[in-house]
Image (cartoon, rainbow over all chains, first blue to last red; front, side, top):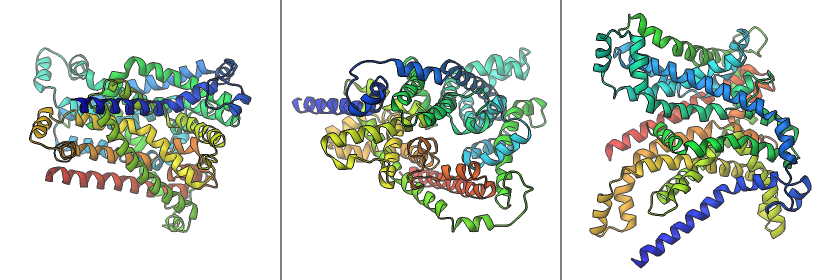
Length: 273
Length: 286
């Protein structure tokens, strides 16, 4: 018994040590964001001697953070909403068809997951440029194109568990297909919708390359875009750069704090399935 | 819903249209462009495999390909060992396991661009300051040569992804029946034997998922590369994804970039397919 408790304490200590190591980059970012440019050079690892909020004020203004945050929100919320709705609809149609053709279409979506972004990016920008669609709405449409494959795959798996007799009962009661989907099926898919939603939110919120090619310089810059410009501008001024990074992370940390159970479960389900 | 039903096609129309115009048509166009002299403005003219032949003598591209391979292999090994280790730690009987899960997973939620900038500060400023204060030489001058750039990328990537892979291993570890482990313990099996003969075979499918995910993620990495080293010094840490972006949008050599992009696609697809194939086979044998 005694041996077991010593072993336990070693594991506890190891865990805490690793956790400290894990958060140390965040610690270093935050404490140095409060220092002056001079102090970062002389005192890099310890707490600041005097707290200064000047860095944050300036970074917040230069990032036009409120506007940038709203841009990020709009892109993410709109994209994820249409991905959820249209992917669920398509997965429903595919799962209730069962013909060879529907298997081929499903396979096409799954196979599309193998295509990395960089191998289609150049013609994509050229084609959408020709169609005058390199803008905010074009971006959201692109997210549907890139996001639908995994989403359909996950919805398709969940739909296997929803009995077809439900569809039939609702049809007899006078629902058409769209009503069956909207009133019966989509609500039943809520657990998997949360998983699909979380996976897409994490990806789209943080995405940099696609928006940098599609909406940069349009006044609808998202957080990663704005931060990249800001960082380029203050490349040797770490006190400002770190304050900007800290501000940019805060929304994510708040979101994680409130929804960590769902997030971890969603990521786990998404990866394992 | 039958094939000829209007509703079937109505339900599929939005995603088919989006996938077609955003992924499939650009892919086909891309393959075509890679055989032309297209530069983004001119009328593309067919020139056969010239772009591909030139790639074999393009030292910059070959270097970035080699660097990406080395990076991916190192990352896959480190991330999976760390991920499995963390998963075993937080599924043991320790008290702080929920808090630890939360902390280890956190870097995953933050974009690679931001994480790269944070680590740029840690490597160039903090490492340097600690190195100067303690006189430890290897802490100084990080990211200023290709080998610290390489390990910097591996450390960043492992820190970010180990928590993610941990979550996958946890899902499988929690499915290992407790009574089976206890029975083995009573029968005299030690910790190593229990891991080797019970836990490991049952967690085997997690390796499929994890290796597949880490390898393709590492190979496709761009944001972290851009923000941590920006390919420097002297392009020695430039990976394939970044090479494609720069060839296309800084040098405007669209056709050459697209030839690289096609090779990139073939490698990523080949990695993913082999991995899935090999692991599927293994699982059945077990």
